[in-house]
Amino acid sequence: MFKALPTIVLFICVTTNINAQSFNIPSKGNQVFDFKDTQERNQATFYSEARFENITGLTNNVWGKVSFDLKDIKSTIKGVVSISTSSIKTGIEKRDEHLRGVSWINSEKYPNITFKIKEVTRVDQIEDNLLKIVLLGEFTLRGKTNLVYANATMKYLVESETTKQRMPGDLISVVANFDIKLSDFGITNSMIPNRVSDKIQITANLVGAESK
Image (tube, rainbow, N blue to C red; front, side, top):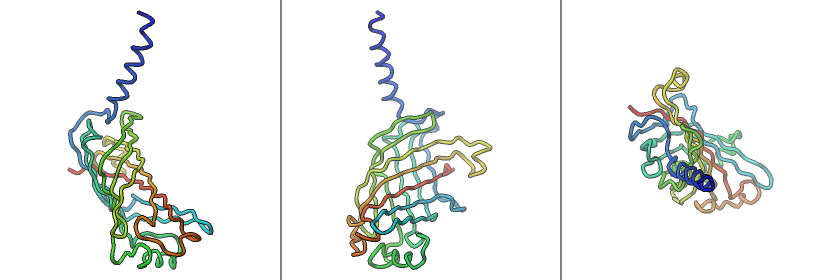
């Protein structure tokens, strides 16, 4: 009997890990969270590490929604997050003008960049209200759409006096990271090899409030 104990413990651990793929908080069924923050505290950044210089771009003009069932994140999550291309700042005004130009992101013709959740390929529960997930999404830049994988953390915050200081209602905090290649989206400016890397690292840091 005692020899079988390690096997039983292992089975319990494996079973728990398989089942613990959603938030372990009182279920409220399907919920929708809105990332539009009137105080523009949400942000998306990009980072380019090239031969001559490193560039970081930032925007706080972020909006979108995500919905899911608290007990079935993997099967039910949906959402789209967008940013305004003209709002991206790199710290140098002249460089920002080039970035918005026809050879680059062409913000006049393509005013938005979007990430649309297609599916979740993995969910791991870290804490009762904290998940690590892998998302497959449709990333659209400069009129072209490609599939990308994003690593993300999702933290569910039940409304409290502390969370009310940010926004009323239950909150969801999301931090997502993924890479793209500019050439996959038709950006092949001759300056890429020296001043801007073809590979761009993108991070989104968002807090959304439950839509009533």
